[in-house]
Image (cartoon, rainbow, N blue to C red):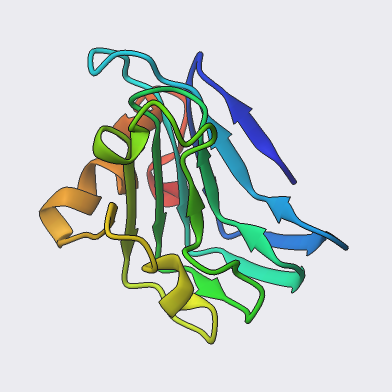
Length: 144
């Protein structure tokens, strides 16, 4: 699975993200160009496996947001874990890349750049709540 875009918030929950990269790969690339856009990607209680190396996220837009919570990472995450896409627009100062209670042999690499945050609960919670995807009316209470 490769997820990219800017028009919505996306929450992938209880997924296995299995990479088949032979040279290099990426799980997600998010494009958000304003702090006012209520978009982003959240991966909750997932498992990242397969071949690599791969980035767990790439910043397409200046204010990209990608969060992993309660996720297992196999030993395939590229050094640093994240990519700011073009390396010239200083997205590493404005993108929001975070991890919360992730583990596994690749988890240390996900925390490998100074601008990827180890989140506290209050920082991670907005990405864990069904309100992140405006799901109050369409996600059953037992699925939240």
